[in-house]
Image (tube, rainbow, N blue to C red; front, side, top):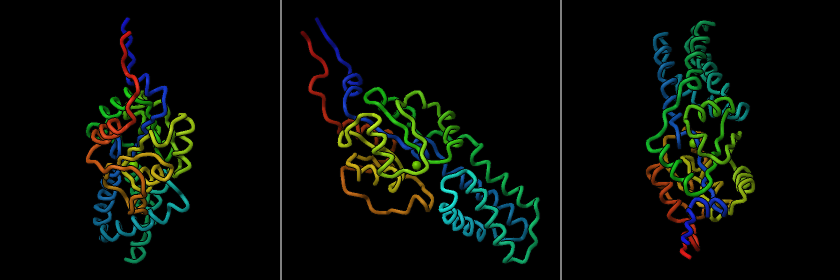
Length: 256
Ligand SMILES: [Mg+2]
């Protein structure tokens, strides 16, 4: 009798898991923020205020506002308006409700616009899910993240989806415990060194870093933590590398 055991079955029962990040790993959100900033800057330029000075003030405010707003969807529009009040006041220009409403509306488009999937994301997640259980661990505003997941069409591939307010060692440990997975047989894949890569390495996981444009908050750590990590060019390469470096099965197929 010929007995075939698929790789997915064996690995699924065992200790490996691949943990994916969402924003700017599977779908592109940073361009949505940059587009909103440029649109608002153009409007502000039209009001005889320096749009670039406004962008600089907005970036400063937005980073500062992490302390009070965290990753809430209310932070970015609030930072936009605060920066507008700042540059308008410096320019001695009156501030109207109309200005504030328009800026707020443009800023909120970031969360209402569908984020494009990054190249190869669907194929990469599908391939990973065919081999091992896969998890989505994404940090951000729950309402926004839920939308991103639904828009991506990738939800069906994940054994577990976790939307968290931040990603640290704790969140990775919780995922490993929930999946009964071993850290040294599991991989984290993401674009952010401080959120996706270093905390995973610090709990003994492996990590594949796919660098992408990030905002200042995601640049808060610049040094790679110690542990097994690879830097790759694409999500497809990240999955290929992770799968190729996982512990080989003792028996994948046997004939009796
Ligand atoms: Mg990310």
